[in-house]
Image (cartoon, rainbow, N blue to C red):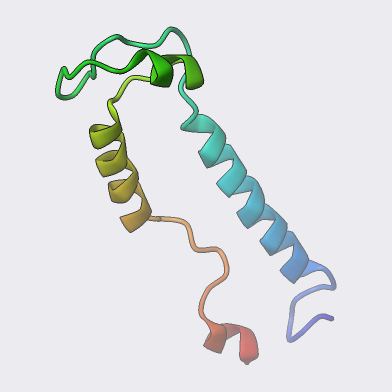
Amino acid sequence: MAGGWTRDGAVQDQIDASIEDAVQQARSRIPEGESLSYCEECEAPIPEGRRKAIPGVRLCMKCQEEHDREETIYSPINRRGSKDSQLR
């Protein structure tokens, strides 16, 4: 269903692009390489279980939680726009 000057499928293309961006962003956050024994931010020891569970881990749980919280606050991508712009 096209609306205004958009072609058929434009909305689905926009949704697909948003999903692809989110997947790429999530993949880029997966740690790679060898796990560290100590957190690179606070130098607290990283438990062996965490190092085995997440290969390439670089942060302790406390620092990782803080890092994740900061990431969820800032999201620069919004391809969908506001509802008002889609209803017109």
